[in-house]
Amino acid sequence: MKKILITNDDGVFADGIIRLARAAKEFGEVWVVAPDGQRSAASHSISLRGSFDAWKVDFPVEGVHAYACSGTPADCVRIGVLNIVPGKPDHVFSGINHGYNMASDIQYSATAGAAFEAAFQKIHAIAFSEGADDIHEVTDRYLRELIAELMEKPLGLWEIWNVNFPSCRLSECGGIQRDRLVSTDDFYCDHYNETKVSEDRTTYTVEGIRCWRAAEGTDLRAILDGCVSVGKAGNIR
Figure 1 (cartoon, one colour):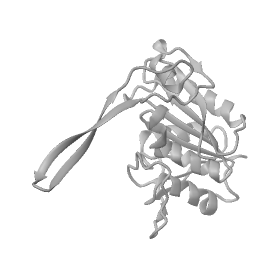
Figure 2 (cartoon, helix red, strand yellow):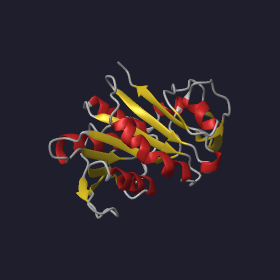
Figure 3 (tube, rainbow, N blue to C red):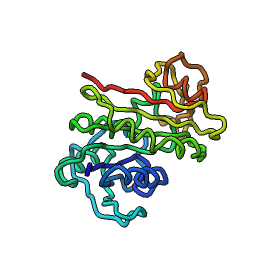
């Protein structure tokens, strides 16, 4: 039986990771090593100075071996692969993230960063994300189908599969668009709001405005068109 390691950046008890673990049980023995709290936008960071902890938790999916971790999502993958899962996992799933991970945002994503860490460890990796509107109809319809498909599809060196599910009703979904490129368009146009707190100190708070343009054939275009986006993403070579 194949061993599947699951992590995320929303926390070990987030709704998305529970749903992913429940689906993954149909495809192998599932191990969860995930952060003890929110770690969004941690990218591929790992803990080099100091230590972090991991401990067993009662996970709400029967038969799943689960650990919480005080480190980053990439730390979770590292200890999962190197220390916790006996004989190393065959696959790493990261997600299901609460919010899209595509276009320029993928560089900040700890969901993608955890999957890239698995790729660095030479483990086949898939990142799953969906819109943050809590509409799961499309995800529920296509999740198991794409797990079965992508587990059998090879990846190149330091590549991951990156899947994004649109947050629309199933009746509004245009199906799956495969082989999507990572868009070079900005998903969010960011700026910082300034608040003067003293004569020599200013507080900056980020604010993003959604951009609604994207080139054809890209992950962002697929989501804007109400389709599931499936494509490869690669890290630095």
